[in-house]
Image (cartoon, rainbow, N blue to C red; front, side, top):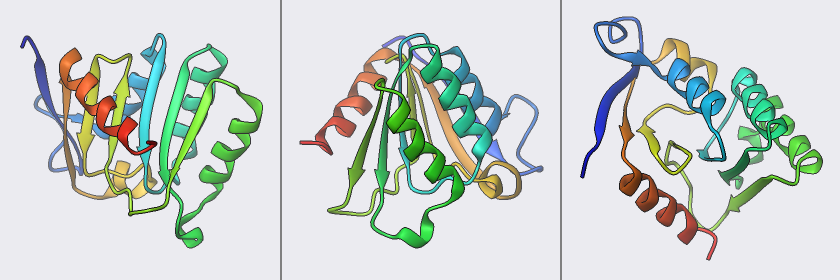
Length: 154
């Protein structure tokens, strides 16, 4: 296995000295994707990330979003934006997970890069909280994670 692993974080005391912020890494993964993105979503309030997803859809990128939607109180304007995008873009597939709480925080880009961490796609997770994760540049790991996500839709 020839992979690279990078520490990703949020929180002012954790960023820097080789540790990149979640928001920057997620935005870069979405913007640089060339054919496919998969994301798990527990809650979203960061509409900037949703706008990046919309731009990816316009570029023809296939996007799969796995979302736990059992608690409507967690829905936000950003979630509503994602729902509108589903009606506008055939290359967006949403997979609603309702049998168990989907709490995983994962982004997979082009079946090559995987971000796994604790941060939701919210302003507080990106800017205020101390969140920690890893970015793994490894096709096998990306394939394995996509396989796990696929099992949620079976």
